[in-house]
Image 1 (tube, helix red, strand yellow):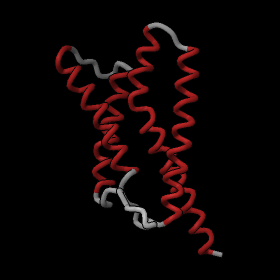
Image 2 (cartoon, one colour):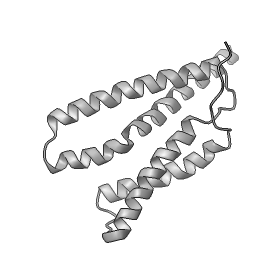
Image 3 (cartoon, one colour):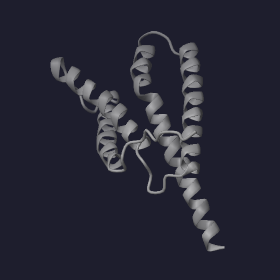
Length: 139
């Protein structure tokens, strides 16, 4: 049975990076109180950061690679599984170890933690795979 390819076209990958990186940086600046906002501006910027990280990571990971083959699909699936494992371990660990207002901060970070883990894991695994292929070509 032929599986339908549900990936975005490759052009979505740079669009994802354009959304993901500035959103992640802005979120970090807000978290570390380098950028302080108040009122409606704070709400709007927080929403933009969460949406930017979520959509950006979705576009990065769910758009086609230059070479989209069975190995890329396998890496994509393994990265998703590993990200879910790491996410659940962090969630359980932080739930046990963090209390009070600090837990609310973690809960906000937790909104974008899974996509961030997924992007990092997938990019690392694709880098390893591409390096391995380059090394094999040199031999």
